[in-house]
Image (cartoon, rainbow, N blue to C red; front, side):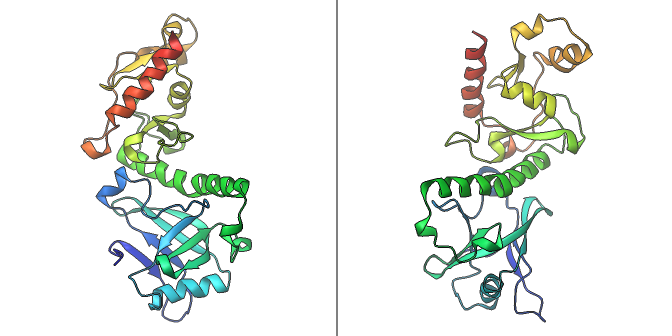
Length: 258
């Protein structure tokens, strides 16, 4: 039987259709890419409540699908904190696997996923990552780092990103907190371009050529001054950057400087 604790389908008593779906945050979420899976067709799945397809909440999602009505999807990024995704549509019903298929357009309702071409599957997967996985990943990482840059302590959320240690373009670049670090936009850009590296023991390194440059205060205080400083990480070990990922990424930083 599917676990339903921490999940929910919201259906007002005076309506036959659901208005929203919820996946609550669990401690294990930090190391999992997402609670429900993305199918090989590139579309996200949402598990039934319980194992009875006729349960009233499951029927409420089925009714929303038949009427092509949008829903809000609330995904937990920390205890009591949710990232809203809107609109979400139920575009398919899969009783055999006790799951619904989620999409982002009413036009997708009822499409035959088995007939999707390879480019269509790639496009669907890219859309799912951009509109669902990445916003949730950012929310989880920023929550883990108390909305603060791990390099310089900047605390303005609008200026912060969730930087991947292993790029999400790689098969194992999963959107999980141990593969992420909260960084301000300047340090994120420097990290992605190997101007800034982080050793496996969480020491910040700045590219040697950059260390020898003379420029304005941003270079001096924003980058050069960060050299040999310790990365600021969450106190909970399960939320801290994964050492093996850091080592692999640091090897790329060193190779780029050679």
